[in-house]
Amino acid sequence: MKFFRSLLAKYMLIILLAMFIVQIAYLVLALFVMGIAKTEEGINNTRYGEDSNKNVIEEKWHAEANKIKAIELEVIEQLFENWRGKYPEASMFWVGEDGTLLTEVNVKEQLPSEWTPAYTTKFIKERYDGDPFTVIAFLGEDETNGFIVLEIPRLVLNPPLKNVYQQYGTFVFLGVICIIIFFVSISFLFFRGIRKRLLMLQDAMEIRDVDGIPIEMHVKKKDEIGQLELSFNRMVCELRDSKNREQKEEQLRRELIANLSHDLRTPLTKVRAQTYSISKEELSDEGKHAVKVLETSIVNIDRLMENLMSYTLLMASKYKFEPKEINVIRFVREYMTTWYLVFEKEGFEIDIELNSFEENKWIVDPLWLGRIFDNFFQNVLRHASSGQYIGVKTESTEHYDAFVISDYGKGMNNESNAKGAGIGLSIVDIMVKGMELDWDITSSESGTIIKIIRRKKLSE
View 1 (cartoon, rainbow, N blue to C red):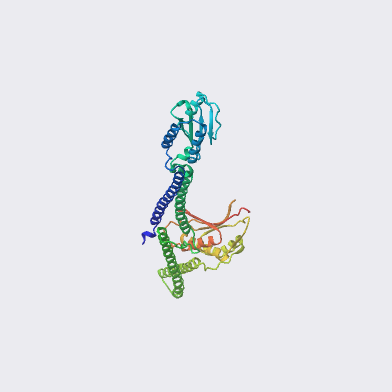
View 2: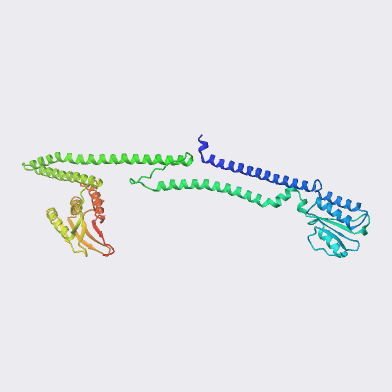
């Protein structure tokens, strides 16, 4: 059963159908031709009986001409009338011994009244094996009595099949051409249908649904292309199931991170409280150093949990985002005052140079922009403390305005005890792009330069 649904079986059916139609067409044409031929033959037999053969006609014409004893006009005309009764299309005439045209019957062309030897020779030459079929016979047994001429159109004497071919050959040829065109048309429609279905399959592969997965196809047939469409639909279903599982796993992972971040804050708060209590006791220098390291670790863990929470919310598009127009120069200048004492306490050289842009007002979320600066400044404190330098400046070019944060640390590629998993920079990347800004980072052994960039529009 599977074979009969295949494209190969359908094409073989077209071939067999074409062969069958060709055979049937030839059979019909043959019957048609034979029917007409028999009709023609019947008409000929009705008209001429068995005397439709040219040799028979020629022999009888000579025989009847030789039988005439009395060479008289009435006798010749009676002979012509008898032959015309048998052959209505025939024409006859009598030329006397002196070359005079004595009588004619059913002659279509203009004959000369006087026949010269030259004209007679020319006439015989033109009529020899020509059309009409011409028989010339002398009267009686004496050649001086003149001659009589019988002319019959060759179309009348042709075999019936030949006449049919001459009359209907064009129709037979056109019939064969129509059969060929029919077969070519069926083949064209067959392969056009295959091509159309393949193009539909290609479109289905390129079109994406709202979830970014190709759409399923409606399978109408169970041939090879239909099986391919079914396989494609199964693949789409598997992709959709896989994406659903991935989304569920991602949701579970986010919930797990959020829950862990929340649950860890309670014991972390207790550890911080106990650490503070210990720091109030009389401790040795080593004890004081250990408490300080412990406090630093607690701060780092707290910051890590906060970053994990923020990253999870950002990936789930649940982090609060409220953009508005603010003066970024004033915002950064005021924000630096909250960090100035921190860097000064750690012994950093602080270099702040904030010049106005052509357009100081940016549409950003102040909390997001503050979080970006927090992450950068925390990285400087954690990873670039050896350089003891922090610079915050502005930079303007023809194409962009930017805030530039630089340090003299050992670079981001340098291994550090405080080096984390890079979640902070991932958060920065998401927030910067969410506010339609760009950022760029350049790091080497002599320091790191970070730029927060706002591209200028053409209208500006």
